[in-house]
Structure formats: C-alpha cells, structure tokens
Amino acid sequence: MARLYKDWLRAYMDYSSHSEAPDKFHFWTAVSTIAGALQRKVFIDQGYFQWTPNFYIILVAPPGIVNKSTTASIGMALLKQIGGIKFGPDAVTWQALTTALAESTEGILQEDGSYFPMSCLTIASSEFGSFLNPKDREMIDVLVDLWDGKLGVWEKRTKTQGSDKIENPWINLIACTTPAWLAGNFPEYMIGGGFTSRCVFVYGERKRRLVTYPGLAVPKNFKEEGNRLARDLEVISLINGEYVLHPDAITYGEQWYEEHNNRAPGLLDNPKFAGYLARKQTHMHKLSIVISAARKDERVILRDELEAAAKIISALEADMPKVFALIGETEDTRYAQDLVNLVRIHKSISRTELYKLVFKTMSYTSFEAAIIAGLQGGFLIVRQFKDDQYITTPSYIQEAPVAEPNAGTG
Image (cartoon, rainbow, N blue to C red; front, side, top):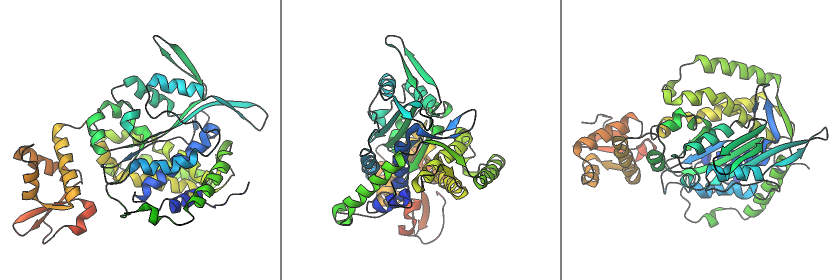
C-alpha cells in the first residue's frame, strides 16, 4: 500500500501545529507514536545486542504552561486506530506491569515462515506520578531492565505469585510531569541506578503561541488529515525485520562515536550525566530507526537519517541541566524553584516585589540563596533598572525593563 506522505514526522508536525505546545513536545510525541507502531518487529543488530525503537519519553513543563497530556494524546489517538497495538495501563505496580506484558505476547510471521514471539506494550501516562512510584525500587529496576528490549525469555519472581515468563519484552513509554513533581519525588538514586539515563526528557517552559479557541485554529480538513496520518501509520506498522546501516551512515557513525568519546562534555560536565552520555549512541540509533520508518518502507538507515537523529538528540541537552538539577533537590533548591515559577508567571518583576510575595514562607537569607541558585542554573536573569533590580527568565528577557546589563545580585 503506497504512502500518502513522504515523511510522516513532517506531516504530523503540520497536523499538530495549531496547538500551543512547543514543537519539540509534538515531535517527540510523534516519535513515540511511530515507535508504538513499529513495536519490537524491527531492530539494528549489533551481534551482542540489538537496538530497538522504544523510548521512555518524559514531557516536563510547569503546570499551565502547556497542556502536556493533550499533546501526547494527539499521537496516541492515531496509534489506537492501528490494529494489534497493545496499550498498558497508565497506573500500575511492577507486578501488574509484568502480567500485562505476559498477556500481550504474540507471534509475528517472518519471511522464512517462522514466528517471532514478542511481548510489547505502549504506555501513555498523562501523569507520570500515577504510573511510577519512585520509592518502588523494584519497579524502577524492572523498567531499567526492560528498556534494552533484550532477546529471550525475561522472568521476574514474586514471593507469593510465582513468576511471569515473558518472551522478548518491550516497553514504549510517554509520560507527562512537572518540574515540581520531579523535584519532590525523584531521589538521587534514580540517577545512580540508571533510570534517568534511559529517559528522553523534553523540557518546555513557555507556549509557542497563544490559541484561545483551538477549534477555530484547526483547518477544515483536520479530521481528514488525521485519518490520512493513521492510514500511513498502519503502513509503517507493517515494517518487519532488521534495519541495516548504509555504508555512508556507518562512516558517519564511526566519526561521530570517536568525536563523542574524545570531546569535552561541555554543559553535561557533571557525573549526573555520565549514564546519559554512555547511552547517547543508543538513543541516537533508536531515533534513526523511527526517522527512517517515517520516510520509507526500505529497512536501510541513510547517513542523513542518522545525522538528523544525532542533532535532534543533542538539541535536548541544553535543557538537561535544568531537569537533572531537580532530582535529589534540597529545601534550598525547592525555594529556588518556587522563585523561578513566580518569575515565570510575572515575566518580569522587581526584586523588592518578589520578596514581598515570599517573605512569609522564606527568610531573606533563603531568598538571596534562591536567587543565586536560579542565576547559576540559568533559570533567572537579573538586570539593574533605576534603583531596583528586575528579575526575569531567559524566555522573556525581551520583555524585562532593562537600563543597563548589570547581572549582579546586589
């Protein structure tokens, strides 16, 4: 069946362009949607292991800035139109998750007439906190273990219910949360245990545009475009088998890997990011499968597709310090986060007025420390204006009253 679009990802971005959410939220929703359609039927074989196109995508934004759950639901609504795609519950224990995986097992017919068993779930959680209890170490360990999509039978035993044996388990997750939830619920061991390095955190802190009435913003053929996208997504879901890297893609991948391992980490020069940097190559090749599948049925990853994947993954890194700074947060950093949220609401506010808003809940010493933390983290900017200082965020720097570029904290 011939496709209607040359590039499903581009078509989806046009389809979703009438909402307020940032472009990157829609792009990564589209990635999760294609990944859910492909399931574990496709892979890049590396002998010792395989790269498969599943992701743990976490959309992070302050409440009221963007409607994260609505953004994710646009893609998931298309995926639900594809037959054979199994969705996991968005609120589970690890026991319920493994049971759902065991019940999802099916055999996929191969070219040689054999059947390949796989146990695949796509999970769309509008509230990450409903799906994941960070204090449940076993749940975290299960998610870490299943992310690789290892071949073979996976088994998890319980003290009272025996064990579920799952053939070729595979989980694709997209979830939504706020910086405050991450700060209040993600302990430090979530980094050390490797869970966060397996996640793709997509951070947004402002709307890309204001849309008062979405129903008036979408074109008349909106539903028709959705049907066309779902039709092409079904074509994509039929792709089955090994992806191979074009020789030019291999050349690029080798050059990239050498540079990646020899260059200074820059913004990510922190032990918190070591796990992510070690897995960046995996994220990149997972994404290259999705980009390739969005464009064509042939299971060949071209150089420009692998190069695009590398650039898109790297583009997220500017916001990673903001996200990771929330994990294992102390009371002082929570104060800083409160100030950042207040400044974001006011867009620009004098230092005097800001302190009036918080003096009942924090001391002046904590207030000063919170401003310094916001400056050092890149969340706040302070500018001198007449006899006071005005505080804003980088997103709204053009709107702040500025007389002279004095970034001191006074």
